[in-house]
Length: 233
View 1 (cartoon, rainbow, N blue to C red):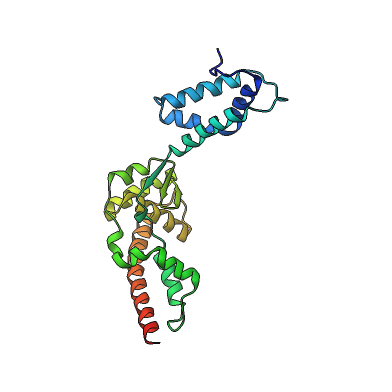
View 2: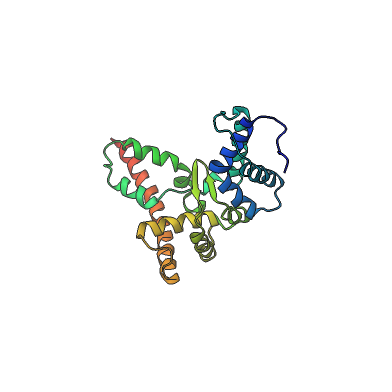
Protein backbone atom coordinates (compact mmCIF):
# COMPACT_ATOMS: atom_id res chain seq x y z
CA UNK A 1 0.00 0.00 0.00
CA UNK A 2 1.38 3.43 -0.92
CA UNK A 3 1.85 6.14 1.65
CA UNK A 4 -1.24 8.39 1.86
CA UNK A 5 1.08 11.37 2.44
CA UNK A 6 2.72 13.62 -0.14
CA UNK A 7 5.40 14.71 2.35
CA UNK A 8 8.54 12.62 2.77
CA UNK A 9 10.57 11.36 5.73
CA UNK A 10 10.29 9.00 8.65
CA UNK A 11 9.32 11.91 10.91
CA UNK A 12 5.97 11.93 9.13
CA UNK A 13 5.51 8.22 9.75
CA UNK A 14 6.45 8.71 13.40
CA UNK A 15 3.77 11.35 13.83
CA UNK A 16 1.09 9.20 12.24
CA UNK A 17 2.15 6.13 14.17
CA UNK A 18 1.95 8.02 17.45
CA UNK A 19 -1.44 9.41 16.51
CA UNK A 20 -2.74 5.98 15.54
CA UNK A 21 -1.64 4.30 18.73
CA UNK A 22 -2.40 6.92 21.33
CA UNK A 23 -4.86 9.59 20.42
CA UNK A 24 -7.35 9.25 17.62
CA UNK A 25 -7.70 5.55 16.95
CA UNK A 26 -10.35 4.58 19.56
CA UNK A 27 -12.49 7.64 18.84
CA UNK A 28 -12.09 7.32 15.09
CA UNK A 29 -12.99 3.64 14.95
CA UNK A 30 -16.11 4.28 17.00
CA UNK A 31 -17.08 7.19 14.74
CA UNK A 32 -16.62 5.07 11.62
CA UNK A 33 -18.90 2.39 13.03
CA UNK A 34 -21.56 5.03 13.67
CA UNK A 35 -21.08 6.90 10.38
CA UNK A 36 -19.55 4.48 7.87
CA UNK A 37 -20.22 6.76 4.91
CA UNK A 38 -18.18 9.67 6.26
CA UNK A 39 -15.38 10.27 3.72
CA UNK A 40 -13.03 12.34 5.95
CA UNK A 41 -13.19 9.71 8.66
CA UNK A 42 -12.50 6.96 6.14
CA UNK A 43 -9.42 8.83 4.97
CA UNK A 44 -8.09 9.12 8.50
CA UNK A 45 -8.87 5.47 9.08
CA UNK A 46 -6.73 4.61 6.03
CA UNK A 47 -3.87 6.68 7.43
CA UNK A 48 -4.03 4.88 10.75
CA UNK A 49 -4.05 1.43 9.17
CA UNK A 50 -1.14 2.35 6.90
CA UNK A 51 0.88 3.70 9.84
CA UNK A 52 0.32 0.53 11.83
CA UNK A 53 1.75 -1.61 9.02
CA UNK A 54 4.99 0.37 8.61
CA UNK A 55 8.07 0.29 10.85
CA UNK A 56 9.40 3.60 12.11
CA UNK A 57 12.64 5.11 13.32
CA UNK A 58 11.71 6.30 16.80
CA UNK A 59 14.98 8.25 17.11
CA UNK A 60 13.56 10.90 14.78
CA UNK A 61 11.21 13.48 16.26
CA UNK A 62 7.74 13.85 14.69
CA UNK A 63 6.99 16.56 12.19
CA UNK A 64 5.30 19.24 14.31
CA UNK A 65 3.39 20.75 11.42
CA UNK A 66 1.92 17.43 10.38
CA UNK A 67 1.20 16.48 13.98
CA UNK A 68 -0.66 19.77 14.41
CA UNK A 69 -2.79 19.05 11.34
CA UNK A 70 -3.61 15.55 12.49
CA UNK A 71 -4.35 16.73 16.03
CA UNK A 72 -6.69 19.33 14.58
CA UNK A 73 -8.45 16.54 12.69
CA UNK A 74 -8.76 14.57 15.92
CA UNK A 75 -10.21 17.59 17.71
CA UNK A 76 -12.82 18.23 15.01
CA UNK A 77 -13.68 14.53 15.01
CA UNK A 78 -14.41 14.45 18.73
CA UNK A 79 -16.33 17.73 18.49
CA UNK A 80 -18.52 16.24 15.74
CA UNK A 81 -20.10 13.94 18.31
CA UNK A 82 -21.12 16.84 20.58
CA UNK A 83 -24.51 18.46 20.06
CA UNK A 84 -25.18 22.03 21.16
CA UNK A 85 -28.67 22.97 22.33
CA UNK A 86 -30.26 26.17 23.61
CA UNK A 87 -28.59 27.35 26.82
CA UNK A 88 -32.01 28.10 28.35
CA UNK A 89 -32.65 24.35 28.68
CA UNK A 90 -30.19 24.10 31.55
CA UNK A 91 -31.53 24.39 35.08
CA UNK A 92 -29.80 24.08 38.44
CA UNK A 93 -31.38 22.20 41.31
CA UNK A 94 -33.96 24.61 42.70
CA UNK A 95 -34.33 22.40 45.76
CA UNK A 96 -30.67 23.08 46.54
CA UNK A 97 -31.01 26.82 45.85
CA UNK A 98 -34.07 27.02 48.11
CA UNK A 99 -32.15 25.38 50.96
CA UNK A 100 -29.41 28.01 50.62
CA UNK A 101 -31.97 30.82 50.51
CA UNK A 102 -33.79 29.57 53.60
CA UNK A 103 -30.49 29.30 55.46
CA UNK A 104 -29.67 32.93 54.64
CA UNK A 105 -30.86 35.68 56.94
CA UNK A 106 -33.37 38.12 55.46
CA UNK A 107 -31.71 40.93 57.38
CA UNK A 108 -28.27 40.55 55.79
CA UNK A 109 -26.78 40.41 52.32
CA UNK A 110 -26.77 37.12 50.48
CA UNK A 111 -23.51 35.15 50.47
CA UNK A 112 -21.51 35.84 47.27
CA UNK A 113 -21.81 32.25 45.99
CA UNK A 114 -25.60 32.35 46.39
CA UNK A 115 -25.91 35.79 44.79
CA UNK A 116 -23.92 34.44 41.83
CA UNK A 117 -26.20 31.40 41.57
CA UNK A 118 -29.32 33.59 41.60
CA UNK A 119 -27.86 35.79 38.87
CA UNK A 120 -27.12 32.75 36.70
CA UNK A 121 -30.72 31.58 37.08
CA UNK A 122 -32.31 35.03 36.76
CA UNK A 123 -34.43 34.05 33.75
CA UNK A 124 -35.95 31.13 35.67
CA UNK A 125 -37.04 33.36 38.56
CA UNK A 126 -38.69 35.74 36.09
CA UNK A 127 -40.28 33.22 33.71
CA UNK A 128 -40.65 30.50 36.40
CA UNK A 129 -42.04 27.13 35.27
CA UNK A 130 -42.62 28.30 31.68
CA UNK A 131 -38.92 27.59 31.01
CA UNK A 132 -39.61 23.88 31.34
CA UNK A 133 -40.04 23.33 27.61
CA UNK A 134 -42.10 20.91 25.55
CA UNK A 135 -40.45 18.04 23.63
CA UNK A 136 -38.79 18.95 20.34
CA UNK A 137 -36.87 17.19 17.59
CA UNK A 138 -33.53 18.94 18.18
CA UNK A 139 -33.38 17.91 21.83
CA UNK A 140 -34.40 14.37 20.97
CA UNK A 141 -31.65 14.20 18.34
CA UNK A 142 -29.12 15.58 20.84
CA UNK A 143 -29.59 12.49 23.01
CA UNK A 144 -28.11 10.42 20.17
CA UNK A 145 -24.76 12.18 20.60
CA UNK A 146 -21.96 11.31 23.00
CA UNK A 147 -22.16 14.68 24.71
CA UNK A 148 -24.56 17.61 24.94
CA UNK A 149 -23.36 21.20 25.30
CA UNK A 150 -25.82 23.55 27.07
CA UNK A 151 -24.27 26.98 27.39
CA UNK A 152 -21.05 26.36 29.33
CA UNK A 153 -22.34 23.05 30.69
CA UNK A 154 -21.28 19.80 29.01
CA UNK A 155 -23.19 16.59 29.76
CA UNK A 156 -21.95 13.16 28.68
CA UNK A 157 -24.92 11.10 27.45
CA UNK A 158 -25.12 7.74 29.21
CA UNK A 159 -26.89 5.19 26.98
CA UNK A 160 -28.50 3.51 29.99
CA UNK A 161 -30.23 6.79 30.92
CA UNK A 162 -31.28 7.86 27.43
CA UNK A 163 -34.34 5.59 27.14
CA UNK A 164 -35.45 6.54 30.63
CA UNK A 165 -35.19 10.23 29.73
CA UNK A 166 -37.28 9.70 26.58
CA UNK A 167 -39.94 7.89 28.58
CA UNK A 168 -40.03 10.64 31.20
CA UNK A 169 -40.27 13.20 28.40
CA UNK A 170 -43.41 11.53 27.07
CA UNK A 171 -44.97 11.28 30.54
CA UNK A 172 -44.32 14.90 31.48
CA UNK A 173 -44.48 16.43 27.98
CA UNK A 174 -41.05 17.81 28.85
CA UNK A 175 -38.08 18.64 26.64
CA UNK A 176 -35.88 15.58 26.09
CA UNK A 177 -32.66 17.25 27.24
CA UNK A 178 -34.34 18.65 30.35
CA UNK A 179 -35.77 15.18 30.98
CA UNK A 180 -32.27 13.72 30.77
CA UNK A 181 -30.96 16.26 33.29
CA UNK A 182 -33.87 15.43 35.58
CA UNK A 183 -33.36 11.66 35.32
CA UNK A 184 -29.61 11.82 35.93
CA UNK A 185 -29.99 14.17 38.88
CA UNK A 186 -32.82 12.18 40.44
CA UNK A 187 -30.91 8.91 40.31
CA UNK A 188 -27.79 10.50 41.78
CA UNK A 189 -29.78 12.14 44.57
CA UNK A 190 -31.52 8.91 45.57
CA UNK A 191 -28.44 6.76 44.88
CA UNK A 192 -30.46 4.35 42.73
CA UNK A 193 -28.96 1.74 40.43
CA UNK A 194 -29.45 2.17 36.69
CA UNK A 195 -31.20 -1.20 36.35
CA UNK A 196 -33.80 -0.66 39.07
CA UNK A 197 -37.47 -1.42 38.49
CA UNK A 198 -39.26 0.77 35.95
CA UNK A 199 -42.01 1.65 38.42
CA UNK A 200 -39.42 2.81 40.95
CA UNK A 201 -37.55 5.18 38.65
CA UNK A 202 -40.78 6.62 37.23
CA UNK A 203 -42.03 7.36 40.71
CA UNK A 204 -38.74 8.92 41.82
CA UNK A 205 -38.24 11.11 38.74
CA UNK A 206 -41.86 12.26 38.46
CA UNK A 207 -41.84 13.23 42.13
CA UNK A 208 -38.54 15.07 41.73
CA UNK A 209 -39.92 17.05 38.78
CA UNK A 210 -42.81 18.42 40.81
CA UNK A 211 -40.50 19.11 43.75
CA UNK A 212 -38.27 21.18 41.45
CA UNK A 213 -41.26 23.15 40.14
CA UNK A 214 -42.48 23.82 43.66
CA UNK A 215 -39.02 24.82 44.87
CA UNK A 216 -38.63 27.18 41.91
CA UNK A 217 -41.76 29.06 42.98
CA UNK A 218 -40.65 29.08 46.61
CA UNK A 219 -37.27 30.45 45.54
CA UNK A 220 -38.98 33.32 43.75
CA UNK A 221 -41.07 34.08 46.83
CA UNK A 222 -38.01 33.99 49.08
CA UNK A 223 -36.12 36.35 46.76
CA UNK A 224 -39.02 38.83 46.89
CA UNK A 225 -39.13 38.58 50.69
CA UNK A 226 -35.41 39.28 50.86
CA UNK A 227 -35.74 42.25 48.51
CA UNK A 228 -38.59 43.75 50.57
CA UNK A 229 -36.68 43.28 53.82
CA UNK A 230 -33.58 44.92 52.36
CA UNK A 231 -35.66 47.84 51.05
CA UNK A 232 -37.16 48.58 54.48
CA UNK A 233 -33.90 48.09 56.38
